[in-house]
Amino acid sequence: MFHIIRNENVRRVVPPIIAGILWQEMAFLSGVMPEIEDGYALVTNPGFAPVMFTFGIGCVAAAFLLKNYNGERGKRMKWLFYVIYPLHLAVLALVALVLGLINLSVLGL
Image (cartoon, rainbow, N blue to C red; front, side):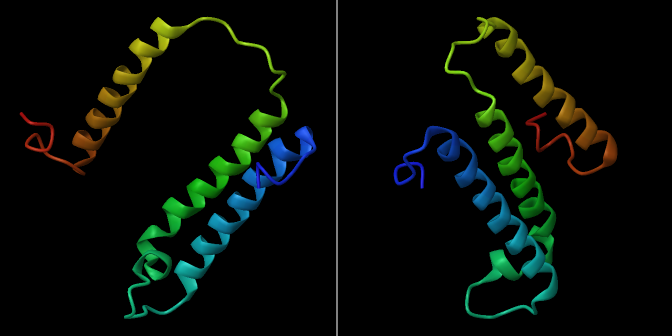
């Protein structure tokens, strides 16, 4: 769709919104459809519904960010992201550890 749509403003917004709608639809269908034995576990497994719902929200958020992109390079904050990314992963691992979702062996300790 990014290649087919020629209008730049439409090209930035429409494909992510359509992808978000499709993810939302799959999330809905996974919650209401019965389990099918022919290998469609991703679409029909109710456990994947929250994940697909989150992907749909992310697609729509991406459309908002792409719509507001002005074509200019942003501030140079490379080292800030080199610090934030591993730090937020450590915080998520700590939260999962405290909630009992993982144990220390998963972290290699």
